Length: 134
Ligand SMILES: [Zn+2]
Image 1: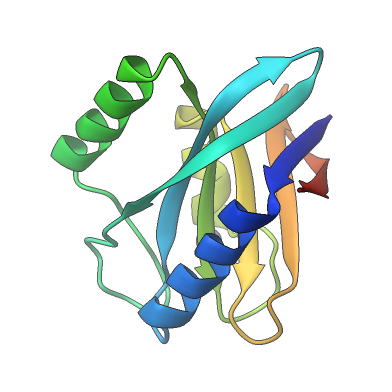
Image 2: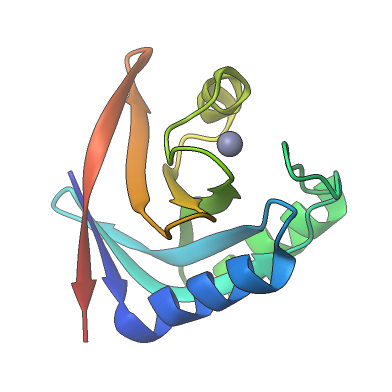
C-alpha cells in the first residue's frame, strides 16, 4: 500500500504542525484511491478540540463539513494526519480510533518531523509507504 502526497501538501502539513506546537495538530487529506495507491490532492486543516499536547479530537460538525467538502469536489477522505511529541507510531488510543476511521493514518513527530503512515487491516496495524510527488 502506497500513499502519494504532493510536495505542496506536505509543506502545508509540516507548517500546520509547527503552528500548533506544542499541541497535537490534526488535518485530513482528500484524494482518491486507485490500484492500492492513495492519491492525495489536497489538505484540509482541522481544529484539535482537545487542545492538548497528548491527544486530539475533532468536533463532529467539523468532520461533517470536511466530508461535505470532499463530496463537493468528488474526492474522498484518504488520510488523517496528526502530530506526536514522541515517536511517529500509533498510540493505543490511536489504534482504537483507527478502527472507527478506516483511513491511512499519518503520524508526524514534532521533534524531528519524522513521518510514518499506517492502516488498520484485519485488526493489524500495517505500514503504508509514503511517496512524495511534484
Ligand atoms: Zn496519536
